[in-house]
Each structure stands twice: as C-alpha cells, then as structure tokens.
Picture 1 (cartoon, rainbow, N blue to C red):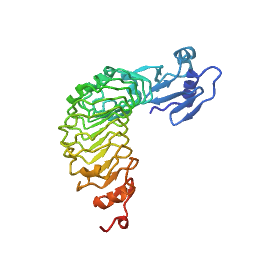
Picture 2: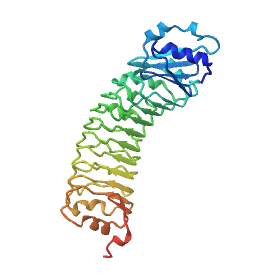
Picture 3: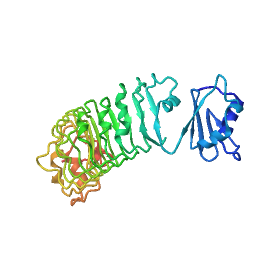
Picture 4: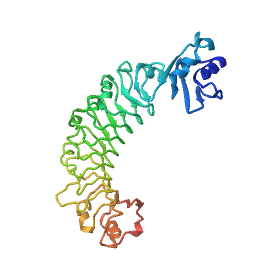
Length: 345
C-alpha cells in the first residue's frame, strides 16, 4: 500500500467529497466518506466506489498536492463495470504473482482478458451482476485458475464458463440457471460442482473426475443417468429438490456422503444399489412410511450417520427399530446413539 502524506489524504477526501460534506474518517488506508462512499488505496491506485465522475473533475487534483512520487490514478466504479487490468492492479501490486483475488460486490458485469495473472489460482466474483456466461469466458486464458466462485450473480446458463477447462472447483450457486450445459462434461479437471439455489430441472452427463456435487434447492425430479461413471464421487447433496426415488449411485464406488433430505422420496426401491463405503445418509423430511422401506440401507457396513426424521412413519417405534437393526450407527436423526438405548435382542 502506498504511503500518502496527511495533506495528500486530505486532498483526496476533498477531491471526492461534496462541497458540503467535509467530514472524513481515515482508517488503515480505507477512507469512508458521507453517502456510503469509500476509497481504497492500493499500490498507488485509488479505487473510488459510488462516486460521480463529475465530482472528481469538478474538484480537480493537481492544485491539491496530488503529484510527485506518490502520484496515483483514480479508478471510478460506476453502477456496472468490467473487471479490467486496472482494477486487478488495484488489488495486487504484483499481478503476475497474485494467487487469490476477491472482486465480490463490485457490480461487475463482464471480465476482460487478465491473462497476465499467470499465478492466479482462486478468483471470487460473487455478488455481482454477471448475466451472460460468455462475459467471463476470457478467464479461460488464465493458465493456473482452478477455483472460481460465480455465486450470487444473474447467470441463466454456463456455456461460457465451461470453456474454462483448468477449473477444479466451480460455484454457481444462487443464480438463475435452469439448464446445465452439456459442455460441462468437457471440464475434465473439475472435481467440485456447486450449484445450489437455482432453477435446475435436470443434469446432463457430468465430468468423470467429480468428487463433490452440491445441487440442493433446485427443481430436479430425476437425476437419470448423469451419475453413471462417476467412480470418484464422494459426496452428493441433492436436498430440497423434487426427487421421488433414490438416484442411481451404483457406479459411484467412492461414495461416502448421500444427502437427499427434503424431497418426495416414498420408497428406496429393491433394485437400487448403494456403495458399501457410504457412511452418511440423510433421508429426512421425505415421504417414507414403513421400516421395510429402509431395507437396502440396513446392511451397509460403513454406515455411521442416518437421518430419517420428518417422514410420515406409520410405526411409532421406528427409531428403536433402526437402532436395533443397524448396529454400525453412531448417529441417528442428528443425535448420538447411547448404547444402552439399543435393545438386547
């Protein structure tokens, strides 16, 4: 962070404040001005948010001591903006060495070519105004980018995002996506796909190296065959959807965690196969009614945690039956099992 003299800081406040708004609070390089205006000083670049350009022009700069070795530029963030080289420079002094950048809540609508950030691995663009996924396609030129957060934007599709082949983690939660592009299968390095709180109704074939899928709070009725071939999948969270039956996870040999609470599952079926290594299953708040409907999970040797609360059970003693029949359980309905509560039968 650049060092500015008291006079320069005062001049900076004068430059960006209204004539009648002279009160300024200076704190660790962050200037808070009246009317929710803020100035962040980074590496001789000043980023001013919610400031009218006319104010800066009207106040002038050179006559207020804004010259010399600490001369800096003013980068104005309007109502909507692009992620540019100048904005990146405001966050990182050495852009070619930056490994993580956070541009959340910056009203960004588009990303320009920032391929000069050759070391960038993690980029956060959450809580912005990105609508078209092609507007972030330029990120495909970042050779080291593996983690991208696009949550809380206005995306309706992810075609452009699928061009970023280097990603390991993709978060597109809290957008307006209803259909996931079939191009996602080409993202062969993707390990975690997080897409909660959208309007997704179905999933296409997915990348083979996924180990985590979180698609809760969508409108999915059937996962079909999209999970076939995902031998590395460890976690599937599809809670708060419209599922009526268990998804086909028979080929997910590495599965450990299966969360399907708050769906419409009324039976687990007799032909469904759950991998023997599964240790956590959440079936809470579905439509299960009988103890017999749990038959396919009763003999899972690694099962340690099971949630079946909130179902319309016909048996009053369903919890006791489950404790007695699944000896491997440590946690039932989010409560640790005390051994003395098990029957001696």
